[in-house]
Amino acid sequence: MLRLGLDIGGTKIEGLLLDAQGGVLCRRRIATPTQSYPEFLHALLDFIVGFGEEATPPFSIGIGLPGAVRADNGRIKNSNCLILNDQPLRDDLQAALGHPIWLANDADCFTLSEAIDGAAQGSAVVFGVILGTGCGGGLVVHQQLLVGPNAITGEWGHNPLPGYLPEWDGPGQPCYCGRNNCIERFVSGTGFAARFAQNHGQPLSAPEILGAAAGGLQAAREHYRHFIDALARSLGSVINLLDPDVIVFGGGLSNVLSLYQDLPTALLPYLFTDSCRTRLVPARHGDSSGVRGAAWLPALNGGVAP
Ligand SMILES: [Zn+2]
Image 1 (cartoon, protein in one colour):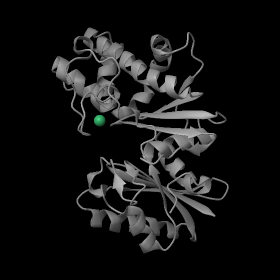
Image 2 (cartoon, helix red, strand yellow):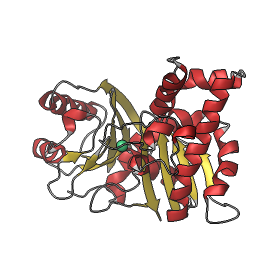
Image 3 (cartoon, helix red, strand yellow):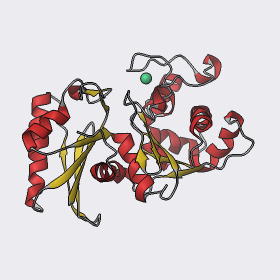
Image 4 (cartoon, protein in one colour):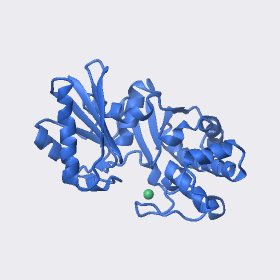
């Protein structure tokens, strides 16, 4: 069967139609409607039906989205695409289209894609990390996505930053989730830039700060050094808990090549071992991993089954 994967993002929805062998038949995208849920649903249905112009349905359909599907009532929760929260998206799509839909968190789809045929291919335990607007995470074990009763597997970004010290980590950081000092507020691309502006009064983007650090600006170099240490503390607790074979990085900050040199050394003081064999690698499929993983969902039955 043909496989359609959709990746719902805050600004765009991407779709990828794959043939039975995994070859790309077509790729399309639209802007994400953000005004209301009915508008969103209507646009998404039109988008899905539009793939019928490229090949004859039926397709299996897997969707990655920010947030999670509640196990008790199938409604969306924890989405920073706010119009989706508490909506029965899967039920609405299935009612309109007349066949099953698989849904999963977007970071879960990313991890699945990289574990199946990406940078972590062939590894038993794979933790996926997205350092982008937020800090997503997912866990794939023996090519199966782990989905628990709370639908929050891998949500390391909303743990409190381990070992938080105001004199080193700066003022407390409230998070949109209602808690304080979530890891996401320190090591996501958004948090990285926001804290630099807070500490130095310069509203630079994350790439601009990194460019300034490479150019020798002391404040930017210090900011990067803190980022590596905060990331090491945060992922140290993940490694102690899961002992993954591979951690795969995606999102904007995963393109910082020095991360793969500096992080392994920075991690060691926080690990319950004197050496670390966990591989830290950038994603093979880059920004396409989310939509590729979504397309894999039905075949692997790793999404939240209808
Ligand atoms: Zn939070």
